[in-house]
Length: 396
Image 1: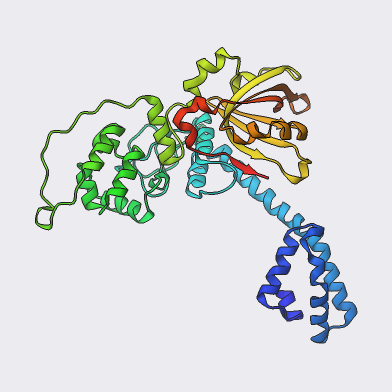
Image 2 (image 1 turned 60 degrees about the vertical axis):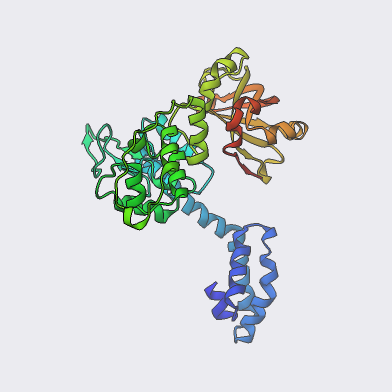
């Protein structure tokens, strides 16, 4: 960009357009459109025609090869560091990714589940302990400043406390006021609302996210307490309110899971498919964990929540789908003809059942495994209200 601006007198906008055309790293990027203005601009500023043509050829060559090569080097370094942190500091890695949302392919729910499978303890949002960002706490202990403790050459992993940023509908300013007001322990929901200057919308968001449990009990009690919160007139604002608490029944597990996903985008309770497992097993739909034992070429049936659909241009119409259940993830490959023939089911289903052939690459030690689809079925109605929460990430 600087070369084009200095040598050819490009404007900042023209130079940025040249950069973006190079970033496409293909003939479709349109680098050739800049040949004439670049060369003519350099000639007008006293550079020889042959020299200017040579500069453009170098830019064109970099756009076709050097740009993706430099990006590949940067990406390789990023992958290396990410892999190291994920392997050696999975709790820190999880907290950092959650604090950087939205980003990448993976949702907070997927990130949390993956960390839990690695043995990381994840703790819920709680107004008495959560900061705005996700933080680290000593595993199995009360909240305090986390300091790494080493043992037998390895760092003992801390727990991850979900931050108030996970609460849908709660603004950052309100979240930071809660953390600041917590210097003196909250004694009630009313005390929280008063000292953190929270309005009814803030309180409703916290209750829906189950973040008031330390002050009000289970979620239905929280919703009642948050709804009952009222700002008293000025003279009575500091006066305590004494009344017997209303005792409401616990919500069913399924209802709590639905509210978790709606309010935070994830649940620390059981995976939704754990509630359906008996029904799925009865119809022969295997879990992701049970599929792993199958030999290459065996018929296979699986069912899971659709977390991602990809149909990259380089795949010549092949569709890749990721299915998630309570035991892990299944990668599904759909050849172009079937992707079109079963398009309605494949693109609309939130809960997708698939039948096909299990493939595992023995050359990789069996680590590369996927299911090649033959038939699909939309079981989304089985999810009930949960079908309305969460969406897959689709890339085409």
